Amino acid sequence: MAGQGHVLKTLINSLDNDRLHHAYLFTGTRGVGKTTIARILARCLNCEEGVTSEPCGKCSACREIDEGRFIDLIEVDAASRTKVEDTRELLDNVQYTPTRGRYKVYLIDEVHMLSGHSFNALLKTLEEPPPHVKFLLATTDPQKLPITVLSRCLQFNLKNISPERLVEHIKHILQEEKIPYEEPALWQLGRAAQGSVRDCLTLLDQAIGYCEGNITDAEVRAFLGTIDQGVIHELIDALIAQDAATVLGIIESAADHAPDFSAVLSDLQSYLHRMAIAQAVPEGIDNAQGDRDKVLAHASQLPAETVQLYYQVALKGREDMPFAIDARSGLEMALLRMIAFAPVGAGLNAPAAGSGGESVKKKSLLSERPAAPAAQEQEPVAKNNAPSPKVTETPVAVRQGSRKPAPPEPAVDKAPVPLEPEPAGKQAAKPVAEPVPVPDDALPAEKVSLKAFRPVHWIEVFSQLPLDGITRNIAANCLVGEVKGSQIALVLDAGQMSVFNEEQQRRINAALDSYFGEEVQLTIAPGPIDAETPAAWRMRMDNERLQAAIETFRNDETVKAIVDTFSGAIQPDSIEPTSPRQYTDKRMK
Image (cartoon, rainbow, N blue to C red; front, side, top):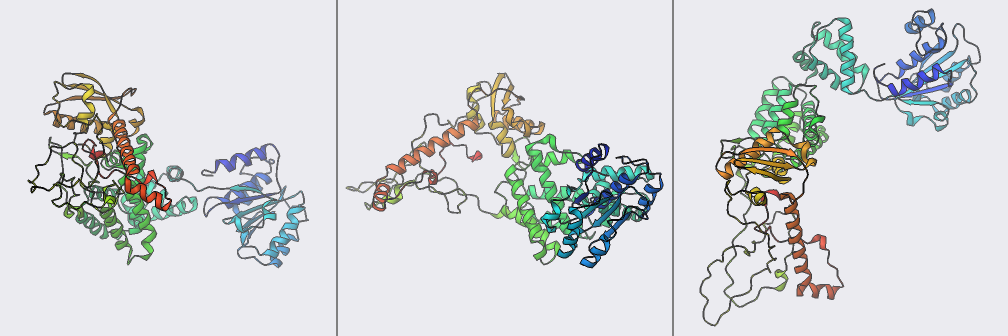
């Protein structure tokens, strides 16, 4: 038996300790070994050497059971014998002792297909079974069995077999048969079987015939209708670049081989799943397909939230595939949806061109989008005396994700904008919104030279580094441990080590080179975090800004009047500052 160790262990212990039950129920999906294990159990019960978990396989009873001609093993297909008359006829001979074997074994396959009256007839025998009778029942749908039958059986649920275990099983078979093979081809067969050993063996027989005795990856892909894993890699590269033209070109080229486009989307979803694992637990990625390094490289080029978005779109695309015009258009729409819904700058983690750290210019559907409106300078004061309605003076929050542009940023920290001369006798109106107080530790804008750089300058320097995504998150969770000339040692929070690799260090090093304008020798190692990291500083600043906005909102006279008039209540969790402050690190928002 391939797999099913949890079932085998129980049966072996029962046989070896002579603790036998009169009825066994084996459940599970098609092809996992329900009937096979029942026949093996029949051999264990009737082997001429005695009841044993290791039947000899040589005695007449073992051989006849293998050949399907043992007189005391009665096999019944319940799907074709559902009538109560059939069941009664079958059970009429239960009272008689076995002809040759030790036990008379009734193996009833697909037992859930029996009628209600048939179950009643079977139940009478299950309640008071003769000592020489054993019932072995198998079904793919145990929910359809009456509870009275289930309660009188020992139930064993056979699970689906993993692709790894199936590959191991068919590899053993091919080695015994001395048939040459390529291991990637076996993985194709293992995944296509979807947990069924029988389906896997059937596909293996097809592969042996199709490949003329030499199983190759290319030929297995041809008869399964799957595509080369390199196509998935190319699609991921195009998604990272947000290049719709390349995506459609790859699908066009793949179409020449008449692939199963639904399977292509499934393979892409599987690859995105591996990328998500690589971002969370890099050591959890296997190298079964020989592309572990590729998966890790792709995982470092996309933010984790974008990978999750792509996975969700692929999942929804597979669900919608039956309703698409055809499978190819369903695949294309899923891929175009990934590009259309991707956050602006989703591919900015891609390798930079040149030493300046500028992102590689990509063709994409997003390339024509207008840039998000930058924070505006403070507007000149109004030229008339009509005051604005007070309700607009309250810093009402604009939820993240709203398509409305953010209100103008208060220019608390900025140089004052020259105002036009006011006519005599007129006074300037108040600004639209009351500014939120700026914390005392707001970041200065001046650069720090490498010669003057010290650990206390790290938050200030970090805020100006050209980093994005996972790489920026790693740097944000670092502290400067030591600075010696051009050598900088960063200490990384141990909780972030699962997503850290040499590529991340290279990018941070390049960003520091660009910032200081000279070469830096960087090392990053895990260690204790005993001071405020940029990530912790950002959280503190955001919280202080939020609390200031909430306090301003609570104290607004208009808000107070509304609350008093309508017996209302303020929900603090619905309030957000009107816009990011100058000191906020916008790249980390």
